[in-house]
Image 1 (cartoon, rainbow, N blue to C red):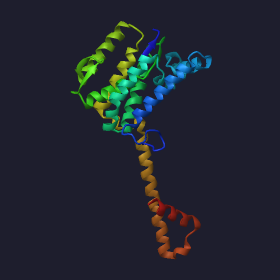
Image 2 (tube, one colour):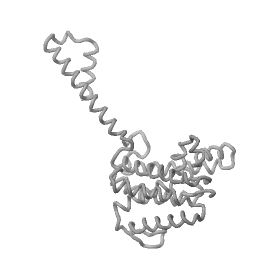
Image 3 (tube, helix red, strand yellow):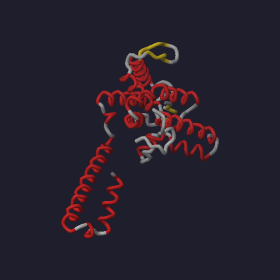
Image 4 (cartoon, helix red, strand yellow):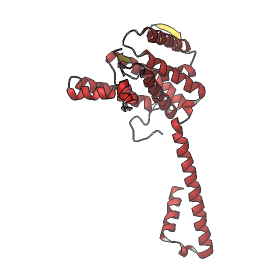
Length: 258
């Protein structure tokens, strides 16, 4: 990540993949980067890019979509290659083990919190998926702590040590304020992934949306059963010919559903 300045659906691509959302996220990021390259010298392209990058003053003024859209904008070829390489290498196993819903919660919530951490960098422009990817790295470390990887393609290191090594580097960078890297965003994404995995929040719907949907479905099923029972009682008392057109249609729809 750079700081410039101080339910699986069969209708979606890769539906048959064991890690469909890793494939989709990598594809979306690559397509967005290609569009950046194509339109980078056009006034319209520059304007759209600036609307999608996270600018803390603009977010504070109401452009809150930037807290999500900035994850799909990258600052150069090496930037996107590094992020997508980590997402591909580690995200696949995380999605397979945890499931697509938990994977998406981890990815986007880590990226969102990373963006919120970046709000302290008031005069910076934040872009890139690093915060979200580091949340996935944290999940990978919780799932496979003793797995050995090649840190920076060179140094053999257990994942659990690599995570803390990255955290120390970013903490040092944030304190020193060096370079054009959004160290605070990295820390926010990494901490979010660690906390969500430790607390089990990756298994829970953010804001309880899925739980409310499940409760609505249970309530609807109970209402439908009560109506079916009432109609059948009417048939027993008065015969099938006593049913209205709507009652017959409702029974037929329930028969087809089950």
